[in-house]
Image (cartoon, rainbow, N blue to C red):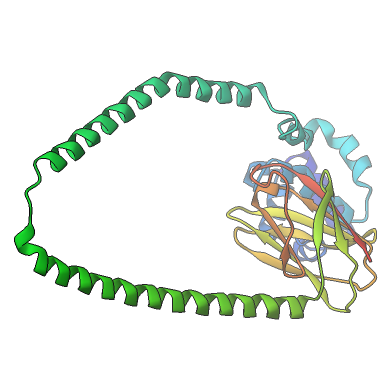
Length: 292
């Protein structure tokens, strides 16, 4: 147990709280809380979670996280959220640029070989075509059979096209019915990107509205604040989802993600279009403004 873990343990005991109490307040899994108290930071799901989890832990005890970090800064692992920002799409590292340039160079090297191969294939195809046309034998004796075969094929193709057309029409009607039903159930609702990590959504007009948080393939920490008040925060394991109910008077919603690359958001049955959603390990703060 290192100094940080020991201090958190002592403060918790001093408050008369158990690990289960801290888990209920922070929504952090019990095993991660035990890892923190024992100083086993490498057991947490990612570097970002070290500070995030410690911050939630100390706040759950009723202490100021900034003052606590100031006293234990030297014992914290050198992992800060700023490192994720420096590696974001707006601040590409030299390594990414170098990799991109290398790929471009590879294409330039292979392009002449590819073009040569295509030219050879085209020439061979032309030779085969000309050879088959010049040396083809007449097949007049088989015209009757060919006509029967062609008629049979034509009828078969006509029947297949009819079946495909009927199937396509049924699918189209079913799709339109589904869309119509979805529109009726969700009402006139829209969400659009209005700036960098900024979204505008139509104002909530019904009492029951929801935000679905999903993790894709990896664990992710998420926090949702509505009208300045924390509504939900916690860690979702791989492929887990969480439904957050939104109040009717919601005007502003802030969503914090510890890993935008594994985050999926669905607001009132409509998926929120995330920018650079393939950036694994990136923290992101999204703001949704409701207007009506």
